Image (cartoon, rainbow, N blue to C red; front, side, top):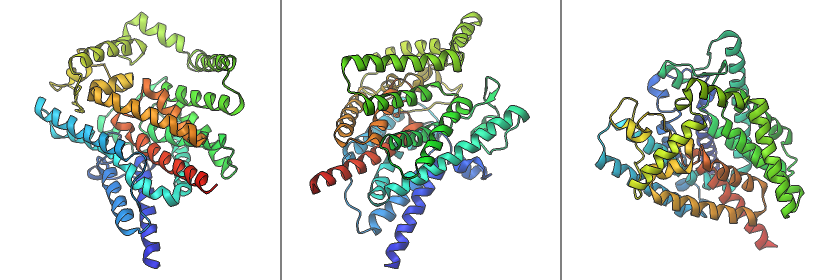
Length: 421
């Protein structure tokens, strides 16, 4: 009995370590570079090691571990697509090993789904509580860093990506830290779903988590697409909770969504000036704006036409290398992450489009029958982010794999309840 309790404790510690690893330990620990470079925004090597350790402990030492359920085929096929794409890159490009190894490791970190699915069978509540608490702490620390930089122009957190590049990203006079956007959005979406479920337990914690997450995205990350997606999720859930989806109510929903987006762009962020100014000074081609995305869309559509089967591959070429303009266009500013699903198809070919559409269909059907707002919140966020910052991007695989594991557990629980009734 003691041995079994120790194994469960060890699995919990490993799962919690994966979460802390994804939050980079709040950037408060000055790890040596030899350690820190394996736990960065792009390099998921350290995370992958923890994932496999967690799987070994849970699978081979827990007698209650059963086979993986609803999404095993999707995870396996996605891993195969990543392997095929890596082989394609090896046969078609010359590159340094990290240019392929780093994105490849990020893609196969979708295997996080496996130990997490096994773990959530008994510890879903613990996982959500830890994720929410860690997210709240991380958000507060990053907001404080943003305020501190505003007055002192100094960075006290140990953010490896900033020190490595030697550049401090600043937008609108504020320090911009985007690296935690993936996991913070995941935690925020879960909290939104829990509130719409009317779960009374830890309600204050989830309300605080949502508020802190929004403050992070507005003032620290300054990532418009995350804010828009989260607002859309809340709008859809509000309508589902309070209204029948008649034609009139759907019209009201779309009007509400448009009003929110306009308020955000026109009032909160002064989006009009951000459109006009680049047109005047000609900087729209390089500032990642709407117009630069239009150039990226044109370029990647042409890439898809000429690389329909395999895409360009998952290679992440460094700046000033021979392959960089192949993956980022002749100007070097076309970013696959900016154009969502289009960029993913340009990267991995038509198979990833088929894979993603089938996954969306499955997620939609499951969330519809399970009648759980956490599931529908995750689904709608994944759907809305298909246009930009899609979960298929290598740096956002953690959101995808965690969402699939949560789907698996909540749908399984629902089916067990229905069976017992």
